[in-house]
Image (tube, rainbow, N blue to C red):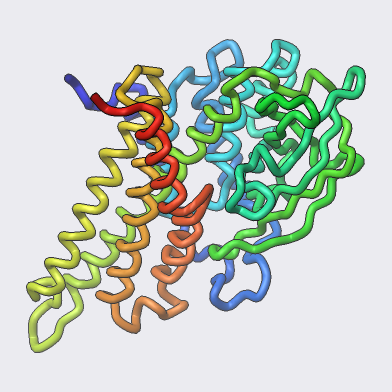
Length: 380
């Protein structure tokens, strides 16, 4: 078996490294020193550079102006973005347009995809439910009213909601008795749509999305079975890629510091206790990497396995959540007081890591999901 990346996937990662060169994590105020959000919106200049490098259309077919690549290529790009804490809705936007391409109707794809690939139209996804702990598809109810759909409900912690043109909202069918989920593309500027500001641990501006009798044209609603499950899996896998990139950057920062910081006349990197802790975190990162690529490959290829692809996604998210937390905690410990200095960027990585650890649910939620899958699909 050949587990190397394709030439096209490597080219996407190389293009991403070029775009993210020069991006600094401390381009906005520190979340530790800011009572509200660190900035009102995302980095529009960086967004334009991503569009110019064709990285916003990575997953789109050539017919829509894209590169026709897959989830693995997207995760390679996300990995690079996390190393510099890039403040752009790259994951949410890319996952949303991929879902529209895979499951949307011809009129919807024609209207949305090309503009989204050029960065002219920004999409995000409401994926956290009402509280952040309940299924997102149960937080909003949808019902048909003649030629339109009517949505009511609340979604919390919607990333980049104040900047997005369209929010992809999962919703359950109301009053039908059927356990079906639809995806509605809700314009931010729409009657019945209200946003309430929230702030993440990373200092980024989130929003509680409130929908009150919001009327959406039938053509803007994706009714295909499995669309939400596929989109959720891609989002979760993308978070794993972000956690991996962040963890790799933090471990590199720690190695550089430990190699220069001296105690008793020797670099602390030569001390056995320091070396062992760093080695443990390196093992965490390699486990995060292996499980990430397994999940991304299952999504990209659709290959069968002993468990549904959701099982591989759950394993990857468990490792990502637990691993990135251990990496930043060890980094803070080995940096000593210097790690908490707000003039040094490590505390920013710690804040972002905490956000990624809990994004779309903590490790415990995915352990429960994995248990359910194992119970439903006994391994024989």
